[in-house]
Length: 492
Image 1 (tube, one colour):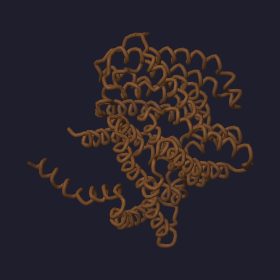
Image 2 (cartoon, one colour):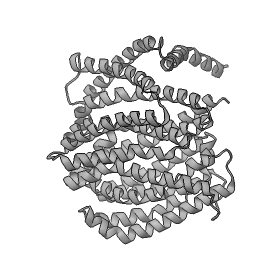
Image 3 (cartoon, rainbow, N blue to C red):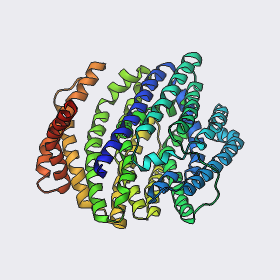
Image 4 (cartoon, one colour):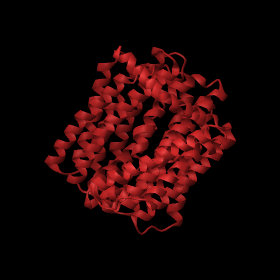
């Protein structure tokens, strides 16, 4: 099987798993927002921030290191698993010891017990079977996706039972603990590999892991700093609304782009010694990514009021401006993820620290120099920071590894123009103003049709002078023929 076909199959299985997990997660969230108050989501979000920050200290890039190696060997896998296990155990004791201080620091004494319970459940993730990395390296996401779905189904059932029974934040905690337990047990069911303690760690792995750990800490800080600042500025209810608004604002990115990025890393690792081909395939991937992201940003911005009122419920209606502003965060996220992959391929992992460091600096600067009286004001500031970060990352990658600004401009221009047509059709053409499910579906349909038509026309034009869009234009033209051929084979 060719690398492109393996990548396609891997992406589809990974996408199926991620979509299945998120579909279940979205469904449960839509039930939970009706049963629980926003403050419940806020408390769990604050507790998760505290635990997650310390957990990044154990993120030493085990999978990325093993995948980047030519061959997997038992010593490397066992030593990686051993280091991660010891770090996790040390972390659990540290978090429990600091739980009281963390709760006081977050001005939420209720979260101390949550922190202790969730921290203890970390032992399950520490014991996960390292053998799963073999599936990832071989682009075999079928069994891993099935495991993800199984764990999510069981944990969601537990969470909903607790939600109907207790109707408080412990339902969210119970679901998370159950998910970690089921995934751990399942990892040993689907993989025959059995890890053993091994303290013989390669020096190259330590250097690589050190860089990944620093990047993980900075990345987590950047991703969660805004929620932490909301907790310092507003009450627990505002934290809950911000968390839910952010979750649905970047939902398309999490459901489509992230699974693709997971499959892309091992697939493109084979081109790390051919920079030109590596970049060529990266530009094509960028075209696919932003061809999907741009209309999602515009669409979420437009339908946020209808979505929050109709789907989430009236008590979440004031989350609409927050959700609209945060949709802009979908622009820098895939750029950061993909350029980090490039830095890893080219043995310049240290450069990947720039985007997170710069994002943190911009967000802290906005917090220090501006006053926010409303949650929506902070959300709009976060959106502006995301736009500035996006531009800075583009310039930085051009200066460090030679990513072409000209090619990236062409990659971004086409979907931006098509998304502008989509916005014009919704804003100045016909759209539904009612706060109803049918109106929401109607506006989504109008936007999708307008964007698809504009994209098809522009794609044909851009294909004449841009190799990236020429590639996708050919793919689009030949897609019906390939589908017909595949269907004919299946019938035969």
